[in-house]
Length: 127
Image (cartoon, rainbow, N blue to C red; front, side, top):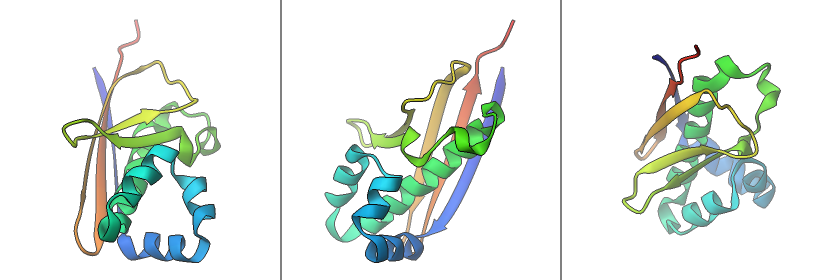
């Protein structure tokens, strides 16, 4: 079994400023419709949730980058981070297939100033 991981941390203020400066243009470039809907539902805490998803997307990229030919093979919206019915975050790849991925687990956290994410990928063994 082969395992890879990715970690990212970001200042929530940076995401808040990007959203305030660029508005919907930034949101639609980075986040999927489901992610925007979820974060916007968090009202005063929305920037923490946007930042956490941003960090999770970066962490996914870092964890799967060994299988990409170059960094431009994947974009922000090829990764979607949504919560399951129990509130646990889950990352999915959209419009890009990496069949060697057996399992991908994501953990995100945020506080007043920072959001952090960790992703672990379990790869299928090649025979």
